[in-house]
View 1: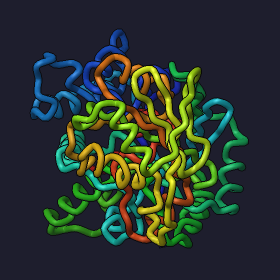
View 2: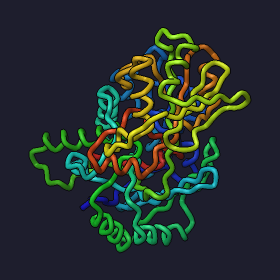
View 3: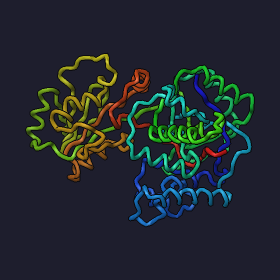
View 4: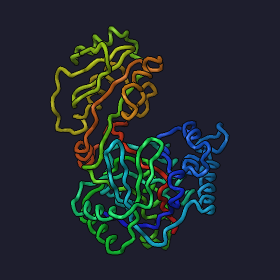
Amino acid sequence: MITFRPFRAIRPRPEHAQTVASRPYDVLDSEEARKEATGNENSFLRVIKPEIDLPESTNVYDDAVYKLGKETFTQLIADGIFQSDLHPCFYVYRLTMDGRTQTGLVGCCHYEEYYDGKIKKHELTRTAKENDRVKHVETLEANAEPVFFSYRGQREIDQIVENIIKEDPVYDFFADDGIQHELWVCGDPKIIEQISKHFQKLDSLYVADGHHRTAAAARVGKKLQENNPSHSGNEEYNFFMAVLFPDDQLKIFDYNRVVKDLNGHSQETFLEILSNDFHLERDEFSSIKPTSIREFAMYLPGQWYRLKPRKLVNSKDPVADLDVTILSTLILQPVLQIGDLRKSERIDFVGGIRGLSELSRRVDSGEMAVAFALYPVSMDQLLAIADAGEIMPPKTTWFEPKLRSGLFVHSIKD
């Protein structure tokens, strides 16, 4: 049984939604966020990345950063940029990118179900990033950004959502990247009860994007419960904000790799070593994009190659069967001597949304020595791995479109 309940969102007034809405905290560094928020005092980046309004030398984990985020959000409320709904509601959030639409329900999940394994993850988290979001939630006393969950699609839930979006949305705007964002408010008690009951029939939710925010929200809820001798179980800190999308509406993009050096090998030697395990095919005129699983593209300065393993044994282990695992097993670990992808400073990761040109640019600039493009993981693979209680290698999935931050905030102190 999955707990999914409505909440009283703190959200921008419709006329301010577009200027408030920002990209998530973890897709921009401080410098990029500072540039993006320039000239826009309402940008939610000032709440989720408050260091942009402090001297550039400021440590992003300094107490002053979190304190400023709280002060900025409080001021946005005082200035009437944000308002709070009077009654608990569910919200329908629709994103449209390149003609493809995904529609999710916004509500609150229970932190205990993360620890119980009902909310399933497929990635490990980094302690520093997790601690950062814990401190942000504790200081703000709110979940500022929703997590992005998926569930196995249910026709009954789809029908309820379809009925809600027959009405005009309260928000409807295009962000700078051309993605359309629409929001509907559902405060009808009967429909709210129907939605909650349908999710009670489900066994699992799946973290698609937002592992650190999910882990942080669960830690905050657990800590506040332990510190409250009068805990009843109904306090808002028991719940955290999430957007739930049916799995059949989601698209995973490739998550590619760039490596700084060839581990002492010349390009010729490197290619010779790879030819032992791969069929190599050059393309003299254009870039190469993998067209199926078990196919890789590699870029060395000025040259793309298609790589296909000479021999593969299908494994019953869903993680071992991933292309990212095969790349590590056959190239990154034995040839380039890159072990722990979370710790190595010789490797970086590039979301497929940036295109193959970003891979060739970073190699041709001399910053990197080689790039690898992979075929995207499927939702079926993600769900199978999460159901098996397994963990994917770091930086395996990249979801687009990204949720905009600032369209709804969940207070944990109500």
